[in-house]
Image (cartoon, rainbow, N blue to C red; front, top):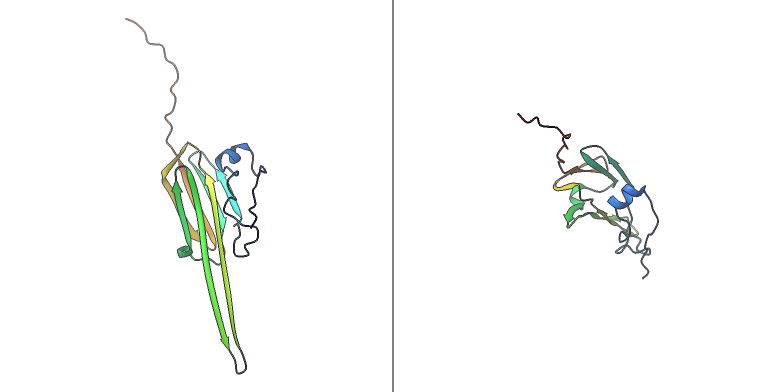
Amino acid sequence: MKLLKSNSNLFPSVFSDFFGMDDFFDNFSVWDNDAWLPATNIKEDEKSYGIELAVPGMKKEDITLEVDNGTLTVSGKSKEEKEEEKDTYIRKEYKSSAFVRSFSLPDNVNEEKITSRYEDGILKIKVDKKDVAVKKEKKAIAIS
């Protein structure tokens, strides 16, 4: 089974550094029909990073969010089975989907302050930045 490896720069350099793509696809098989990658939006403001993943049809119980050693990993797996019986036949359908998406976090984030919520098929993740002390200007002190 062949693995897909991405070396393309999908975001400007600040996002490439933040969301390191080199090892992103290590466990993703091109030939696995059940695996897919959710569309992702990434935004940044002064206090946090925001990540939104489109995962329609999944329940929040199907999604796992973990942070370990500077890597934020979002994964999900769902399975659906339908059975229909008529007079002359029985039909069973199985549908499953799974994804794993990992993001390398920059040094300026507070891993203890990551929050998420699932709403209308969108997983919204907020990654707070560390509080950075405001640098005070140089001040002369008079000698009396």
